[in-house]
Each structure stands twice: as C-alpha cells, then as structure tokens.
Length: 102
Image (tube, rainbow, N blue to C red; front, side, top):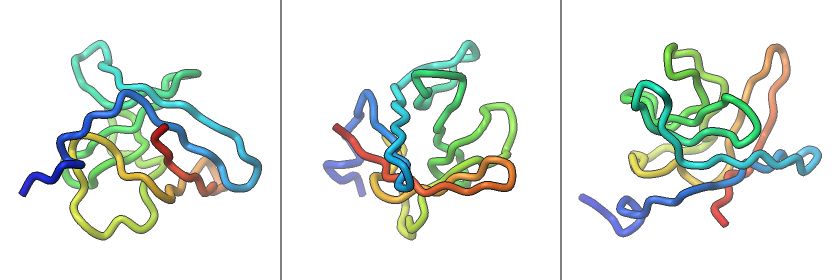
C-alpha cells in the first residue's frame, strides 16, 4: 500500500549529531554507475536504500554498514530514509544522530 509519505521525494536532509550538534547535509544524487541515493555534501559518503536492509549509510560497492535508523521496525519507503534517530559506527566509536528534513 502506497502512502502519501512513500510518494514524497525530498532533495536533501541533515544528520545532526546529538553529542555536539555537528551537522552533515546529504543531497539526492546518482553515482558514476547510475546508482542513486543521498550523498554527503562534503565527501564521498552515501546513504542508500539496500534491497534487504532498507536505508543504510554504506559504500555502494560493499555490504558494509556504517550507519542505520535506530528504531525502524516497520517497512521503509524506498523514496527517502526515515526521519528520527540514526546510529553510526566509525572504527571503535559510535554516534547518535537525528535525521531531519528541512
């Protein structure tokens, strides 16, 4: 069943780190191989819709997950990542973010 939200295709969103307020902005983009997702505006970091895992922060070429929604228990829209709490991993550190559409 398609909901109104599942038709919505935002162009960008922000991840705001809860500990210090650092903001990363992501914009809808397509990579050189034609794969779409959201690319961070200050580097080659992607949030993509994985066929089995839903929306994740990952490398297009691998299944390595760097971040994902924390409490997303229901099916996700394929149009855009879910708002709310996201968690990420960078080496031995973990971070908590709020994904926010402006």
